[in-house]
Image 1 (cartoon, rainbow, N blue to C red):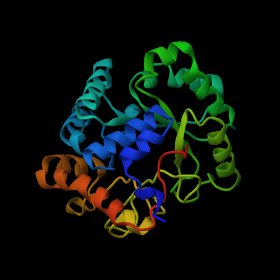
Image 2: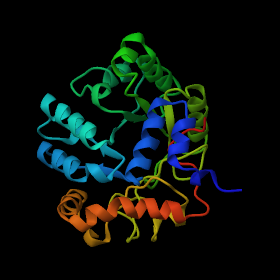
Image 3: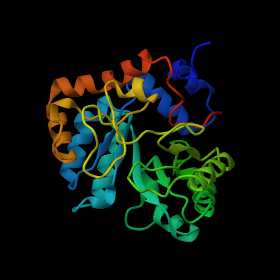
Image 4: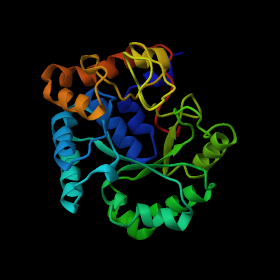
Amino acid sequence: MSSKSHIPYSVRASRHGNPLAKRLFQIAEEKKSNVVLSADVTTTKELLDLADRLGPYITVLKTHIDILTDLTPSTLSSLSSLATKHRFLLFEDRKFVDIGSTVQKQYHGGSLRISEWAHIVNCAMLAGPGIVDALAQTASSPAFQTAYGAEGRALLILAEMTSQGSMATGAHTELSVRAARKHRGFVLGFVATRALDVSVLKNVEEWGNHNDLSSCWRWSFPAIKVHNSSVVTPRSHEFEGQPASQRNNELANSQSARKNMGNYGWHSWKMSEDSMEIVLLPT
């Protein structure tokens, strides 16, 4: 019997009950790309330039919006416009971790106004399952659904981390899985270092041993086939050893790298015989 990972994304889109899951699968199938680009840049110009140049080749753009030194409302509206123009999702890697009432304000309010533009956010379970309850409660409110229901909003739970000495293991991971099952309509999946129900992969490094932030990952080409994953954040060998911002800028300026980026992950996924279901909780 064929692996579930090789069911066409178009078929998965038709079967899945989560609106954002459907959209993600549709984008992946349309673009023949499963690439998530991590845009860890510090200026609006860099962020928007990356989004515009690489947007046609990616499925998701992952941001750390609070590291921008010149963030304005115009930054966010322009980023949203580019996501619409190039058909990719926005994932704000905010890692909510506070008590429920606080994360509700951080998510749906505050200066970052994350819920207005980020299709996907994530959280850690250190404060307990109430954090997922709180975010799901906000997302299920009538006003929220009226504003964003059609477009879709979803949560990833940080079940495990790749940094050395991480405490996000064991009971923390089990708690994450239980919370996800409770809120299937809002929780899209996990960030993890192994298969849970499903996983989102972090820190895919094709050509090196580990990065300068003590990541535990060690990768070899092709990342997807070797590590049983179907959504990746690839780093081109053309720019090995460069800081992320410099590498992404040069990637954006390299026409051949832009064209090959989506093909890299897609063909590796298609060739793999053992890929597990990634990103989305099973229906």
